[in-house]
Image (cartoon, rainbow, N blue to C red; front, top):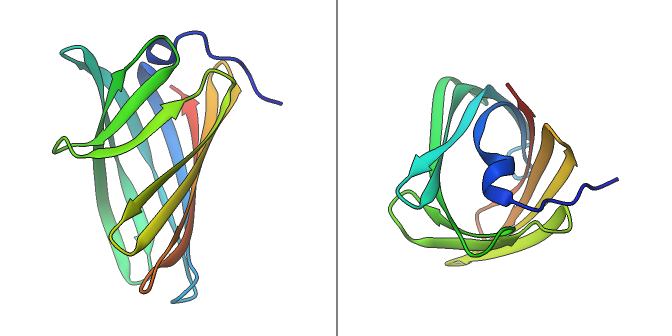
Length: 142
């Protein structure tokens, strides 16, 4: 079941508990990240910042990531890396969205799914000459 999103900025705004599972199919490793994500104001956009504790292969420690969400209407965002480079366009008006990003030889295919008023999920499949992994993240409002 999916839920319609009339205002993406209002829906995303605030803090989320995140749990991420990462499966590196090339190395046969499965990892996990657990932490917090926050969508907070940044001029006329939202800045996404996540931080958490990651366990992946031999690595055990902190991990962090940041993106910028600029809005075009109520349910559409242009997602950019923290340095401003374009990542993908996101239209979540129907509660589900498939996105893609070509990064050199690597193809990133993602799916956003709204699961309720306070829950959503994001999954990525990344393939390329040196990459083959699946990553799924669950978000639950704090």
